[in-house]
Amino acid sequence: MCWNHQEILDETGSAENQPRTTHAAMLAQNAGVDTLVLTHLSPQLASPESLERGIEEVTRVYDGRVIVAEEFEWLSP
Image (cartoon, rainbow, N blue to C red; front, side, top):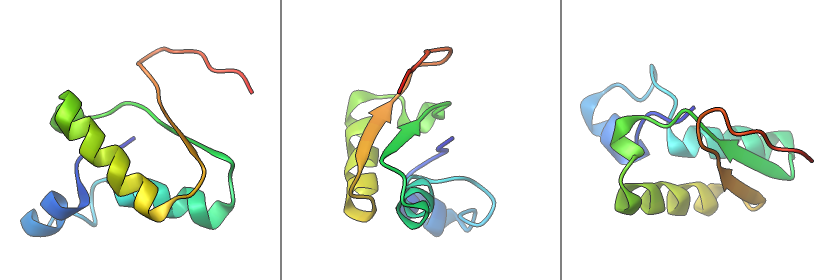
């Protein structure tokens, strides 16, 4: 789950309480996973421009494959 962009959550002081784009990326990078699936995105990440920005934030931290899944979407390895 990603709630919002890192910068916005840092500015509002809620970065520690909400999952954010770079947090998901850091977890995936540190875990050494091949693919990061972002799902259950907040309305703040729903617009195409905002989602593109979020993916850019993720790829600055995580060097694997990134998938943005729709709610209830099934993925197979």
